[in-house]
Length: 123
Image (cartoon, rainbow, N blue to C red):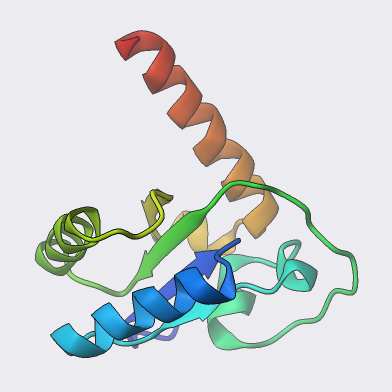
């Protein structure tokens, strides 16, 4: 598994990605990489490593921001910083040893279900 810190974003517009990258550059964090819609069926490991190929398009309106190999303190700092700015409000998730083997589409489905359960519980 590649241990270089990475931020991966799903379903950000070019303008949203640009605003995020400007903020990341200001704080000295690595720029975010977009997960292309034709790579949504690949595992997170394949996406992170830049390997694998899939021509099938994954469609979803959800916005996701994944943290890979970023220490917990850094994740908390970044989420706090993102929430203070006018950036999209995605589903945030950390890539774990378990989830790195999941296809992104499965992780996305799981994250949406989890968010909906929490909203129902808190609502």
